[in-house]
Image (tube, rainbow, N blue to C red; front, side, top):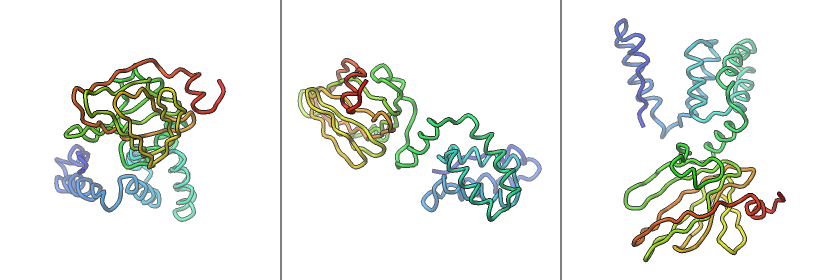
Length: 255
């Protein structure tokens, strides 16, 4: 996907229009957008190290640090990147880079770092907070629609300890849901049966009419693709929450 950049035109459009056009349309619109060659995350790492090596720890360096953070580079990873580069680029340059990196990652706690690491483990986006269905979840979940035509496919992400309520997929015929686990560690449980641990690569086929819940393990983020199985008069029935006692029993932990 091409990156839309206007910084060149905004700053230099009148003074140096050709430079502005090359900056916005070629550097960002073409080079940065070649994700089939290098991901945005990898391009951010290369750019940060290149600027640090030149001692260019100015506003452009801060911009690229912020881009690196947005593209999934965690605080711990950036600290390691700058430490490694210090031996090749120079100690004073590393000091200057660290001062600015601390500002960029100042508001990032361990939870945000863990979220970024989880995103790096999978090809699908975490998506936006799942606010529309928040009342049917304990904890924070995220939703990224991948396909809304023919067959609905959604990437659902759960923070540690997050799970949805007991629920049933109803249908007159057909229907149900398929879960394809893509990252982290989670749990799935049908009513009256023990919970099963879910890991990347696991697939769960949920027939219509089965009462169940699914979510993350207490100490791990978890993402699965939710595939809607076409059915006649299909609908979801949301039921009671999975209370802590049930959840902890499913995870073999004591309350």
